[in-house]
Image (cartoon, rainbow, N blue to C red):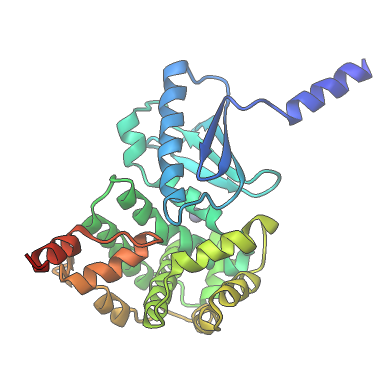
Length: 318
Ligand SMILES: [Zn+2]
């Protein structure tokens, strides 16, 4: 009897994945709870594959060597993905809670997978520094959808600008580290998510002034440190990025931003990337230099924007 129980526990602990994806050097298990039929499973797996490819496409590799997606049915909430959470214990991954009416179109158009998968780029930094993690996921969610051809560049920036203004109108007045620590009780989500995202915009601006880009630093970080642990303090993460970069740029801004009591001014960064607003609508500067600077935010190695290729073609000697 005891032996049967032991075998059962061992089997349950090593449950076979329903699907196995190989993306960007990683093995990704997909586990379905009961109640998903064959066609639903196919649609969901294809959705996870596309977003996993978009994540791996940022710098050419998936951030962890192994990940597990657990697919469950949501008991409440609206839309195709009413709820999702990153799982850090054991094999890292994401639990997705899906709605009843699933279509490929509605899943692909939803931002949840882009956000949750982007969390895997870094370890869990602890509650006071969760703005670093929510910020990174909020920064990359639009970029992943843009790279996957599921969002325009215009819509990507509109999402960021709208998020920044939501952070600006947040009623929480304490420091960002406090807003992070008390996010659930104070409902300071918008401040944490979007000031966090703005930190990475500011970092990209500072990095480009030094001829660097965030995805290059994250790529080195992946090679040296990402698979060490599923949790590191925010300070440890930032210090590791600075070590990869060879200067204390991340920690300089980290120290300033964690104590900030409102949305820091990112207007210089937006101007650098050729992003302005007219009546609340984002206007992107199509000049080559602005397009090149923005292209460095989306991929490493950088993909040269088409407008730049056309310009080079135009100037080619006959
Ligand atoms: Zn998140």
